Image (cartoon, rainbow, N blue to C red; front, side, top):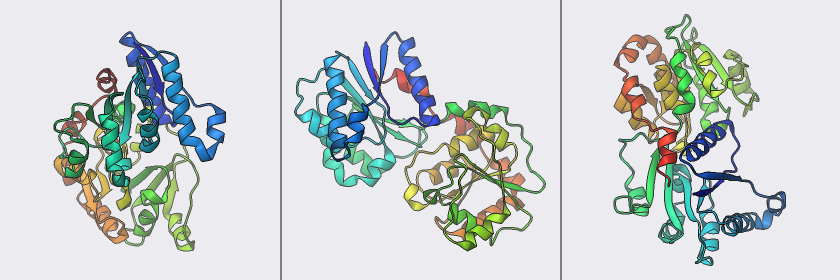
Length: 347
């Protein structure tokens, strides 16, 4: 089978997943071509999405591909629908990805999503989430996508486990003296970094705070946040996914202070928590709260409340051995899917 693989996101995590999926396709005996849009299409901003989809679909059809694998989770459904409606003779089958978060933001497009699924050119719709296999799906998603009866639609639950396979190297050095909490990833308002900073006013003074920011730049809203940041020790090392255990060995507790708007977003934080056997403090948002509750792998706090976050951190510090003893990291890890099964089931 000739497969055209389209993926515009070149971030490290996405590149890892892309490479794994393509490799699996090739092992299955398929011929894979990776597609990138022309600079001309990218420059014409006013018609960007229309022109880019037109270019992509033309290339797939003109070169006799059997399958177009659309691996960009932030697909603009309106433009794809408009193009496919006038291409009733489009030959390649299409598999495309959507993220739960993107759907949640765009529920006004319900009709558009349904129309796309019903198109004969669509082979499969794969909804990417950070859910584990047994998590209860929200009723609105079941209704929109007809999940019980529509075999075209698949829920792909957490594809982020495999990049963290190096976590098994993590030595359990906890608890540290002083007790150490850690934040890693992008230092960003949507991830609640200001909430994290403001919690410093209320957490025990002897707690060590370690931060690893993958982009290296720190943005503050005001002078107060700059002052609070002085408590932070910055780990300036850049850790590839297989090396993240080197950071995790330095901390006792993973902090995820995400805002309410981060519901359904894709994050590797829980996979990291399971793999490294480190408890997590996570904002009480779906679906993460349900996963943490089921496997007892940490605590949740009231979203966007620095005081609530601080209470959870202080509790974890004083009850750390109990928290770790009750956590079911092993079964939590088993509840995640792997990249290869995702690739194999696409055909």
